[in-house]
Length: 491
Image 1 (cartoon, rainbow, N blue to C red):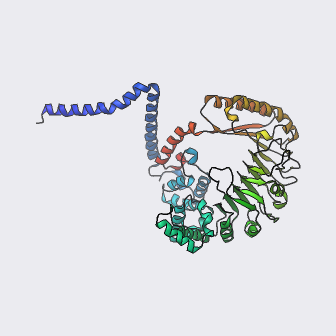
Image 2: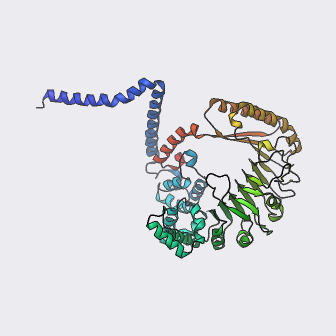
């Protein structure tokens, strides 16, 4: 028969341990008061919600055999996965560092039929952020060659831009240096060069590719001719450390790349200094985006002649050179079939911007300060997007002054452009200051009613700063990693 004194002593020990465990949260509650209690209750509620949600999923669907989505035709499921794959940076919008491929891979684990349908979409857009990822992809394609026709879009890391300039002897020498710990690289140069060459050779069906660019773009002259079906090209330069200048200067369109660029329908160039290249034409080019570039004014004047069928033209955060005092820069192509145009944060440029002979232009996204004083918009414009000054979101007086200007211009805009039906405003990085959110709520009410009377819809889009979204996004991401049911997690 057990000794009662021993049992009480053991219970007493457990009681002491329990009291010690509870001391810390009780001390937090004592010093921090209601805020700590609310935080504790919040985590309890979230945990209970997770448990109930998982229980409901298992009760309703079991192991997904009773889920109606799994009984859809494979073509329909494939369309669903296509929609998911087209959601760019799905996790980064929720505070996660990777894109939608991560969630798509997890969704593919639901059942065997979904895995088969998701494989094509999973390999359709390959993002290679590191050199090691290039080597792994080359090895995967060597083991499973049937996957290569699925790869339609490729993104390479910045470091491969110097590979074509290194001869094999020098590459092997770099490899020896790396083995001797003289350099710090993820993989040897030779392995990276072999992997990239193999990926380019196998992915001949790829129609969209992104390259980092560094020393004039010599790798473009090596790799682009091997991609016969390429339709979309995106290149991004490198910034010099502790400098506002751009490391890469290119001639666009270059004469020696004309054969490779002639079939492209979309080109995006970022962080480059662009000079006037050759006089060759690119008649197939439909979309051109230039972001954070330095543009020669002679190049701007050649847009109409060199890209005669351009329909979507976007200038984002660019700088123009050389500039002379009082000189006028014509950024909007005249007498062109342009349908959409974007102009945001142009350095050393003041408004108002004019839109001469742009009868086809129906969608304009423009820096708001460049539009004040311009009462004549393109005659067939349907959607006007205004992007306010970066610090306008911080000052209530600036915001309300902008509302007054919109009210003063809208009547003339609508009279000269009767097809105008939507006015949008994008505001970036609104912090958790109560005054900012309240200000923009007032703006939405004021302009919503004012524009509605005149037959124009007003849309306000606020991008919340991480200070607001971090806690919410982290909790959602934690739930996202737990549950794998498509309709609860994604849609």
